Length: 189
Image (cartoon, rainbow, N blue to C red):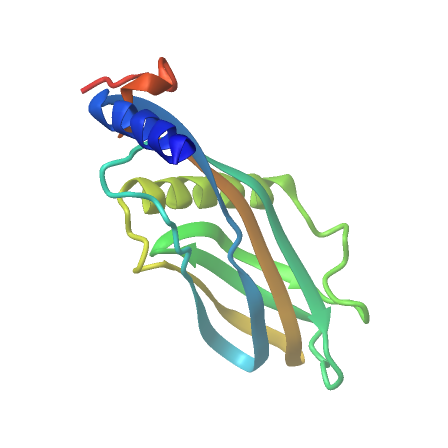
């Protein structure tokens, strides 16, 4: 009985001490991935829709958005006969890269076809779109990537696996028990 009285006394002291608002920082990982199937001959327009679901409170301050990696793995399937594809890429209506001729080999897109003038603008644009996506809290709308062009010399039959790894850092004020001391930082608001 004495233990219960002590526990109740301590609990009541904690509850009577009150609460204070403190600012805490959090990090959330985002890892959208999937497979884009391509089965095309001649001219085409394809689109894929990427949606990242974030568990970030509406009153949080977005502090930083970082894309840690972007992976595209093309894999040629049985029945692929195309020698190359001419393609232009767009992300949410903005041009990622102008029409390029992308050659194929038996194994798929050759590794030597990764020109910096193509890759750097794509990554920069993707980072900007992803940043806008998170900061504007368009969590349920997603991002549309489209590719249009023309298959040269047969049928393009392949899967492209994509994966994005990103982190979002955010902060927000939360109510904590005053007896916890100086946890977190003082709220800015």
